[in-house]
Length: 238
Image (cartoon, rainbow, N blue to C red; front, side, top):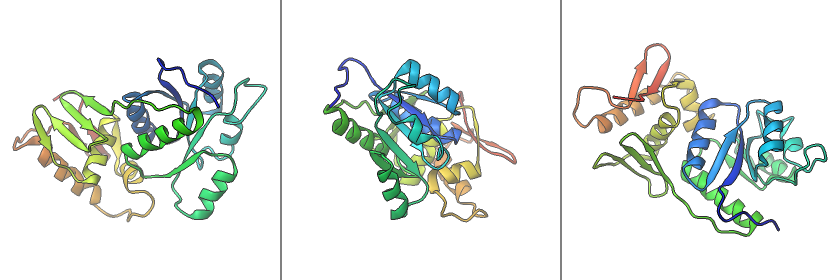
């Protein structure tokens, strides 16, 4: 069994095709006990494997269906040992999960998922594969906004916001992609998964509720801007 370096963060390679979801994963892990990097194609992933030597891979097994097994298995060409794999899937059926385990993944998680679930599963894999307990620092900070993903608490300055699970996930997704326009479809896919009605205005309803709590009576939008005809954007400054 391998042993991690006590003083170094766990190196995690993120192979997720959808940009907003990849940013959520990186933000979650980079503010914890990990250092996370992502790759958008096979050549970039191969370079990271050779030069950076990741110790864990988080991979979307549907968008990387033809490459993931090669990239994360033993390979004389890469010169690296087998890397533990946390697989992501949008299919929650037993057949998909069993096939993934047969192909060598260490754990599998269905999209959408909460940031605390991601952390918990990464911790569990780390303990199983490296026989090491790891400390967590799960506070995400963006400006005066603080998101405690373990205790599910959100602070703006000195105020504590009481959010629903969906509200917390929506805020986290937007904050993980500051300045980037997220379409309603991207938000639906990352938070609600495949079982949603495309014509539904559920995203707009949750954004409206979230804004009410973030603005605290102010008429000026805080943190979340509407981009007409496109979607929503997390504001880098107010």
